[in-house]
Image (cartoon, rainbow, N blue to C red; front, side, top):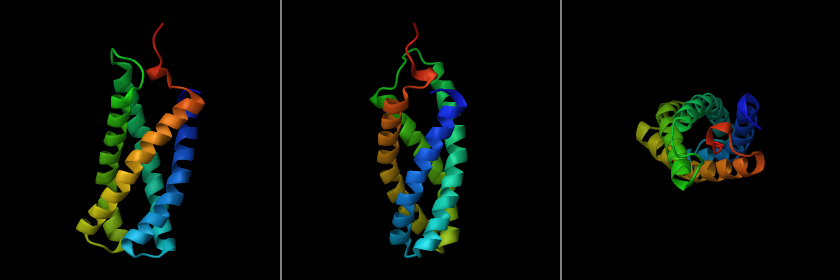
Length: 142
């Protein structure tokens, strides 16, 4: 599976799992109700979808210019870390505002979620590539 179809399937599966997991974590970490945490989890998912499409498009453009092809451990770690750092910058102010917590508390909450999602992103990407194959940008050139 390649191109836009691959990206749509990837983002849909990734975010469905992410909403279920993060709603619970946000409620527990902020003291907010599960319903309020669920709303911010869905908002985060929408932001993540846009960020994911932008980030993966840029990453794959970079990846296609690399002389070493494939997705080894280093490239997978770099991919996950880059995604999560950008996401952190986008979400901390939103969490603080919506959950009625300080920016510092929102930062701590987001760091906790980022640590979880760092592992989740790594495992999800690896599993996704195993099930659906590598994108064209990572395939060895003949």
